[in-house]
Image (tube, rainbow, N blue to C red; front, side):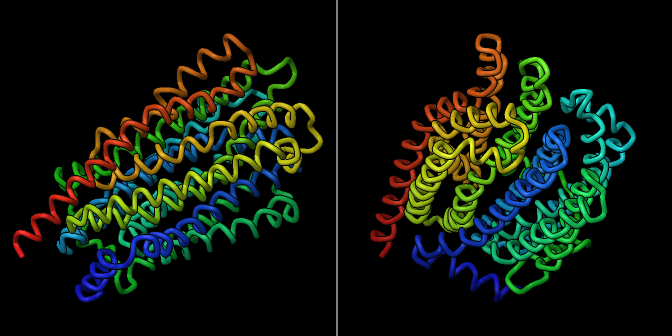
Amino acid sequence: MGADLDAKYVEMTSTSIPRLVLRLAVPSMVCMVVTALYNVVDAAFVGRLSTEATAGIGISFAYMTFIQAVGFFFGHGSGNHISRTLGARRQDDAAQMAAVGFFTPFIIGVVSAVAGLLFLPHLARLLGAPEAVMPYACDYLRYILIASPFMMSALTLNNQLRLQGNASIGMVGIVSGALLNIALDPLLIFTCGLGVTGAALATAVSQTFSFVLLWRGTMKPGSVSILLRNFKPTLHSYREILAGGLPSLCRQGFNCAATIMLNYAAAKYAPAGQEASSVAAFAVVSRTMMFAFSLALGFNQGFQPVSGFNYGAKQYMRVRQAYLFALGGSTLILLAFSTIGFVWAPEIMTLFRGEDPDMIAIGARTLRWQCVSFPLIGPSTSTNMLFQNIRMTFRSTLLSIGRQGIFFVPAILILPMLLGIHGVEMAQAVADACTFLLALPFAVWISRKLKQQGDTMNLSTVNNG
């Protein structure tokens, strides 16, 4: 394993930045897009059942964000540490961290699954399900809960592999599971007549399949293997995971809270008799925007291992070049999707539930509001990821909680009281614009700092030479 990892070090610290970032970004982008696509396909197939069924999987999406919070926390926390230690050539340290980062979320997943199944109706109600939507939310949640340990650990493994520079291995695991999900959806929902339960079962089976493939991927040459004998949890290891993963935990944790608050607001401020249509509309918009954001997020994920390796190797100018390349590329991607979404908003909503004009009207207005400010989250995303990789935990955490915490929570509480359902529709757009204003000075500061560090290292090299 040592020779393979030495070759990885040379590749990550010497290949031209645009080529290296793009090579690592393409598998991440494919992985993110296909994963987001099966969420969209889930909503599209379930939308053929009823508006209440669509709202039910939207309610369940809040628990999915909890799964993501745990998986990304341990995946990014352990993966960022692994990336830096491989850059510093401390391979035994990387192997121990990989084991701790993998086994801990699996245990958490088992505990959360048991607790959720014991209190399933209460969980659905807590997530914001109106009475008419409760049966569908419970049917979907049941199998998602059972698969929780595998889903959490699969997310961890994917991020560990990606941050080692092995994004293509992770892509195979995630994409294979997502394609299986897309194939199982119509079979289980319609052919077997399982309805919403079929959609949940398809997700649970496919996510478990991804878990198996990702775990096998850690055994390939050039990867840090997951071994039970290396599972030696210590206070130091969890401190490292906390430092590297706290921004992800905060970001995904606030995503979970924001989704729940949005579910409540969508039902509370909906016109009379349109509660299910309103909840369904926001669920569809959320999944549609996540699909668009997945390309930009995947692009940024391609730059993360580059920044981690090169920061550990003290190649600061390469870190800066990768950061600026990722920032510009992700912003252009978001701008393109925003244009499409704004122009064809009603047509996009019709794809999910053309029989419900109320859902289409609410969803189209919401989608257009979000498209107005959507390109602005490119700089905040790239800057956040850079801070997270180079262990500037406070700054990264602040940016992580900005979009769905500092700004969205007040927006979703205040705007609907003033503007009713229209305030709910514009809340995310207002939060995105405010997040950009928060991130801009940080982006300027870190770019200048990396340039200064790079100039200092170059001067030192010349003097020593």
